[in-house]
Structure formats: C-alpha cells, structure tokens
Length: 126
Ligand SMILES: [Zn+2]
Ligand SMILES: [Zn+2]
Image 1 (cartoon, protein in one colour):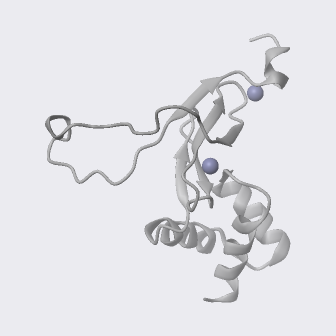
Image 2 (image 1 turned 60 degrees about the vertical axis):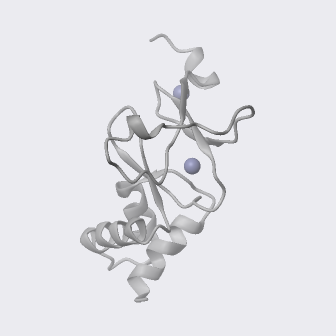
C-alpha cells in the first residue's frame, strides 16, 4: 500500500464514521499535504470494491463512507442535518426477500435507515 493510500485508510480508521469524500480529502490532506483529490477518490473506490468500506447514501444524495463493515449494523439519519449514526436495532432481524421478489438478483446485503430529526435539529425551525 502506498503512503497516500495508507493515509486514506488511517483517516477512515479514526473515530469519524460516515465521512463524505470531501471530508476525507480534507483530513487526509492535513496528514499528507501532497495527497491529491484523485488519489483519495480512487482509494475510496478501491476500498469499497474490496468490501473494506461501505457506502451509505443519505437523503442529500451525498455518499458517506463507513468503515464499520464487520459489525452488522444499520443507520439512523437526521433528515435535516444528515447526521448519520450507527444503530443496532432490536427485534426481528431477518428481513426476508422471497425468491419471487428477487427478479433474478444475487442479493448479498440490505440496509435499514431509520429516519427522523435529531435533538439539535428538533429545536430549530424547519
Ligand atoms: Zn439533525
Ligand atoms: Zn455505519
């Protein structure tokens, strides 16, 4: 792995989850000034292709990169500020998509996004 790619991987391993590509670029550049936006974007694409990072697309259509692929988790989204949290819902975990609803797809994952308004946004006018 090149130094530039390692920087991208390190940014993702930090405490931040669900960063956008632009946010990752800013953090990567703080660590390695000469890193290019193209390198960051290409590295993200590769990490996703390798299954090391998962993409979550929020309501604003912006992709967020999630390094939490080990634990099976779902997401809680604030539809106003796009805050995205990892959650582990209780209850019936098995969501079953019957063969008749698969349209010939090989289905390998699914995701649930709980949507609402976070405490910070609740007090703001819409
Ligand atoms: Zn919010
Ligand atoms: Zn997540």
